[in-house]
Length: 84
Image 1 (cartoon, rainbow, N blue to C red):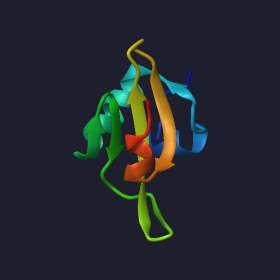
Image 2: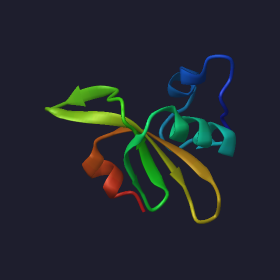
Image 3: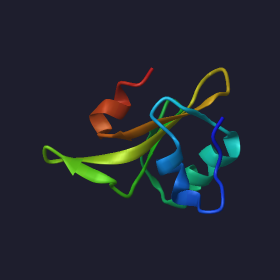
Image 4: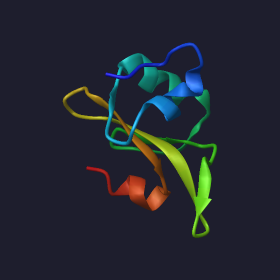
């Protein structure tokens, strides 16, 4: 399980999409900036990470119904909406 270490943004470099993170890390990124997308346990940090083919990508996180916390990588809003 991944967690925030000394530098909070380090999660981007330590985690791969699909990695489980701890609740503290999930809550930290949920509170960093107002989410640009937040629905059904999935949220995206509102600062774009990059732009791909004209679409902004955002760090994307999920709290599952089983109370697991997943880092999904940098996704477009359309991609985040398709997470189950």
